Length: 548
Image (cartoon, rainbow, N blue to C red; front, side, top):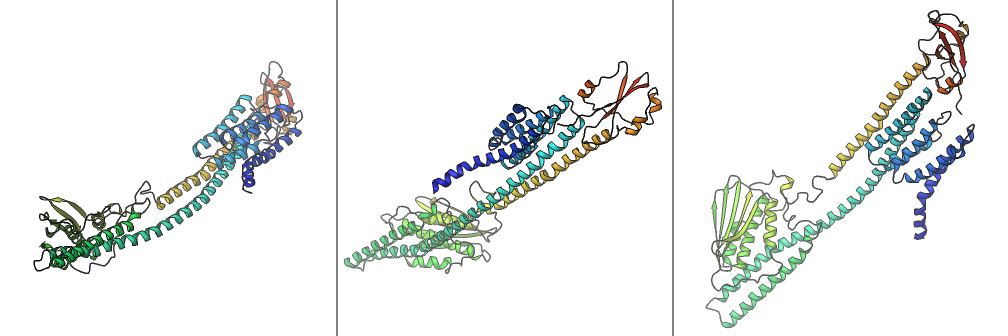
């Protein structure tokens, strides 16, 4: 079943092209049977062969197909007598396909203009009658431009439908991504809460157990039990780190949120305890910590207060884990609407062992802390301090705000930055306006040119009409001055050469030509008046030729 549908899809373009070629060829065949003395090779086989190549070729080169169809129309002007080509229908069909399949508007308009220019050049070279000039200036553009505009409209509608389905697919993917990021956000929040609370408590328990081991009042069994307790706590800390690593494992996957970007987003409740309470609890666990304050900051937002608490808590936890027994100094300084939180610890005493061994894949605490600080518009600097110590320094604003989206972790990333749906909508609107201008301004300009050309041609053809009754009243021997009141103001300038050849002028005369009626679309009889020494010596009726 799949093979049958695939074969049908492969042959469908061929069937469409064959049907179109047959329809266009029918018009040419009808015109061939209607001609007086047609040539089988030139009037039928050659045009149908050109169409047989142009119709399927329009799928890849629609411009060349239009030019080939226009060449068939130009050949009709070179016929004897000239004729309006029956392949105008083919020209219109291929111009429509050019609009549907083409992409470059400027090149397409240049091609259409070139086709008209070629036809006009053929008219000039062959010196055809005025009616065929009108045919080139009116019917050929009518067969080119409106079908092309209709094809452009069709192309725009197809693009709109395709874009709608594509947008629906993108929205579905975005919705799925939002759900995934929401799950990731919750996992990251849980990991951060566990790290900040339980990890801190376990580190303090391990520190207390280590301090009790040194008590002189304990027996050997008590010290062994405390050592086992401290080892169990260290194992628990290691397992906790492994669990947090699993929770954060998907954060580095392509297309997911940056690590820690959603932790404590705006709106999170402030910390339940102050920095002073946090430091007092650390002292009770045996940490030599002290707090110094400089300046009194105003009432800060809950997010800033919680961030200050997190900076101190994470710094104390790291000091307990990596430098047990070291003195920790916390300095909170407020100046110029900024609060600086500086936490330093001295090197650990000789022989002190970490409360918990470092685990592979650790280091998430400072990473999450840095992103938390950046989220509120602050900066974080960490690194060695003094001779073997360590420092964590955060600079925080008193209020969140005044930042551009590009300043924080929510900034758009990747090649699409600044080119979101609104930008795409603006581009689509600009393209629509341009197509609207092309669809109406260009035909209006072309129509104005055609109207002016038609008006000039109509004036030329009607201003040189000599009424049959006036022609019958003309008498030879009269002077041109006497006949001036009867004759039209203009002479007919487009006398076919074949008519003049069939009716040569009398020797020694100068002849003037006039149309016998004002019919603009037919070749009518031509009146010829011949003068010798300004006197009318002959008047003739030159029969007009009918289109065959």
